Length: 415
Image 1 (cartoon, rainbow, N blue to C red):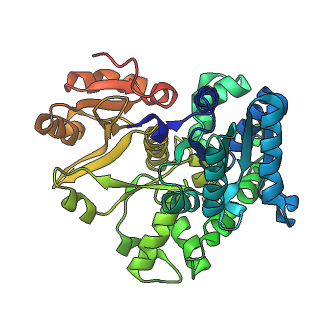
Image 2: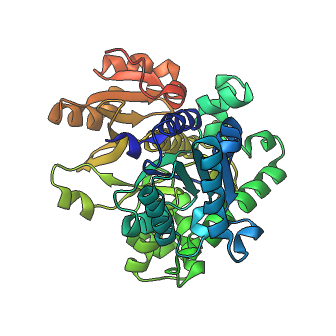
């Protein structure tokens, strides 16, 4: 995996961009993508503050961006700043709102390089698909893409000074959107923020702006079905059966892919040694923030005592989302009566993982241990309650409290 393909937290992303902006300009365009409300605009404004007069910031979704000549004035200002300060950085927020943005960015950037103008370019956008499609078509070889991910429990601790236990509890029951976190004690305001600042703009604007969503109501229903089945293996046929407005399987698959590209849902593939076989299996659906579960489930967060099964699904969803957001390759495995929750590969190492929030016996780990026997490079790991650590270890697996996993991944697990 190259550095440009990493999914990064806020601090790591800011540090990486600062390093790249120290390179001689004009170097490659930095395209910053990621979910809504995770700090992309804040990050660009932080760069503007650090760079002072050498920075030119513009929001492409602001009213003035619709005025004639906006695009030309923006680049002219950047060139003037470069002449005055030796170099400049142009920061364009929500660039997908610029009509034909990729082709226009290519043309402007090629002029910078042709004239050796000392200007760096950083552009952000919320929709991975919009940025991805445009960049692939027009900007080949000219850009590096960074993804600012959903916040983690550690991010909440660092930003808000809360304890680790409170941060982990929030990740499971309410998600970790930084703008929503201060509203967590006021359910009405919290729900309103999630609806108005995240869900509606993402589904009602970002994805619809692609021009390929002919049935918006069906897209919303597919979203509801996806987040309503956290950490569950769900076939397209099963999703189709839950919808009021039934669509063709191809349409449902397309809308599910849009939700994946929009950083809302992950469709985890089955682990298989033969790729064709894995693609034929139904996906395991994971909401990339548990805030989406809490915002769409009328029952609210599950009660650990009265709803242990639903709580277990939410904890598993949070753990798998944490791995996906950290840039790990995440798959599941199922064969006959054997099943494991996740197979992880990436910077964390190779792990096969089972999430257990209640009591269990060694027999309940049969799938985990069978997978590890067949594929010995994967270390078997059980994420469980502290009281059950000994059970997992006696069965021959490594074990970690799931709260610790949500803070630091599998780091610190005994070798």
